Length: 315
Image (cartoon, rainbow, N blue to C red; front, top):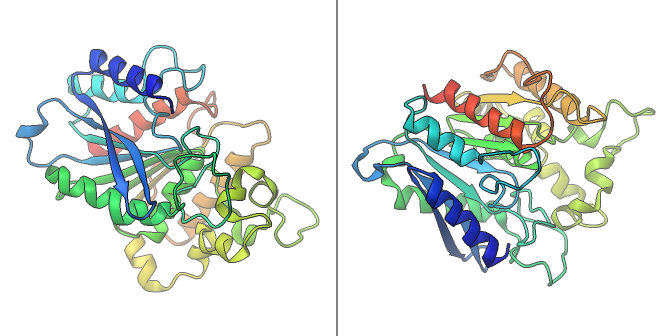
């Protein structure tokens, strides 16, 4: 992201927020790189003893705070919406953390995993690609240390699209850390990468994950099957021992999809994943999988999902 855009985002929110949007950075030992992320602080934070922390995932750190991220946002960003509702007393004060998980130009996603492929040296912002280690060993401890009011309060994570995939990984591979997880129109993997909608049912036919060049950097080209299996939440659940299922029971899942994405891909994947969680009797939130009959795969509806998720979990 250009310095000009970063300055514009900060200047906009300086004028519009009652709280503050801060541009933080960590010189990551895991990434061997300086990594930016945004943190929203509610007004009066210094006088608060316990404040919930909410991690917002997509790809680039700018996406939750960029008014022009897509054309569906008309007047406010997700952070401005939350800040306004805190000011109105509709939502309680909270800290919002927006990690950067993609290349600086947002062209190469890491998915929040320790990447196994290769990428051009021109793609800045990825470093070593060890994003799982960065999140769990550096970013989360940074927030706990620098915002001690979060240490004994609720921890939540929300993800949109590929950010939803990252949230599903955090829920299953980092069990018990989060109290609530929200996923809107997430791109989930089928078990064993076998898409049940494709006939004949040949092994490894989930072409989205296996053939889309968008994931070459994360999973290699050709795909590294061990990495795909390791970072597939559905496969992890199927082989989970009772001790893991017990840990997972401490987290509440709130999962919705758009009404359609043209091919119903995310809707079908979301439906399967929700039913899988139901089969393990894990706590689920929303009654309906489709968020709204008009809901689309865009930032307008993601921002609406975020607000509803926060109202359901923090009030």
